[in-house]
Image 1 (tube, rainbow, N blue to C red):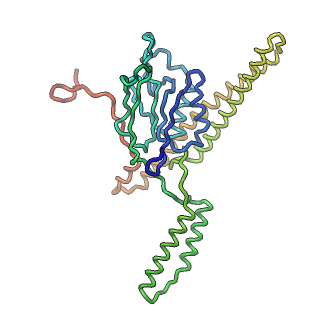
Image 2 (image 1 turned 90 degrees about the horizontal axis):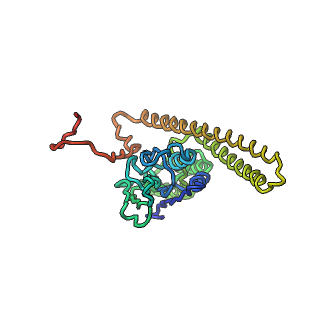
Image 3 (image 1 turned 90 degrees about the vertical axis):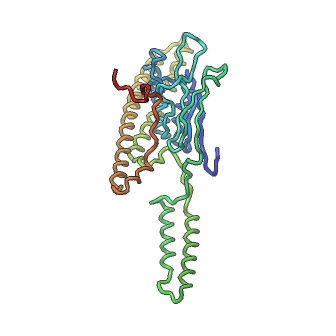
Length: 334
């Protein structure tokens, strides 16, 4: 969606409850995605982060990997925040009265999108559907619009600096009339603007477009993607050998079963490596953020503490209110 020359990307998700292919598909292609404004849809997953688990028994240990993939995709890869409030109303109401309600419809939004009013769960508007209608408001005028720039340290940047230096060296140092100074100033402004237009380009916002992102984050991110790609190849290979075992019943070869066992052991090993690398990635991201923002605070003058306001964001309001007496005072005693 283009609003006022600014591109807004909304991704609607349906995550099949059997294959969970949507989150895997997006995770593999996250690097190629533009800056995402909102990621929303039916994720078919229960997690304590968005569902307290009181409505369903035994969900704490279900689909652990798929839930972690969704969190990694939304939070670490796309830099989004969950708009659903913990303890909020259910988004899925089963037509079977023996099945408890739950939260499986999620809305992840970009922190820069300035969502106003929070997430509204409309149970009445669902009509015959078993999913509630989710509404949220994004103020498009508050979304930052990228402007052209020249990347520091790039070949284009070096060429731009070189041409600016050549232009400045050509300016005379002595003038006889004030009109000559004005003419040189106008000429200088025109040529500098022309050079900027020739060398500046519109930055392409990707998931790594964060000031705090470090080379260590990039290294671990590549390692995780390589491990996931290898895990997918192993799963495909195991399915190949399993199909041999099933298809050739009478001419069963024991080596086929041995191949399935070996590949399964390797899958378990790679899965453990992915879990370990994902844990390291979370710690690395936390350290990178802490190092960057500690530097921002250290560089800020004590008399200009308000310069840090641009790094803050509104605190999410609680979905519950405290108990008060008839005069409006908080009740803090039994």
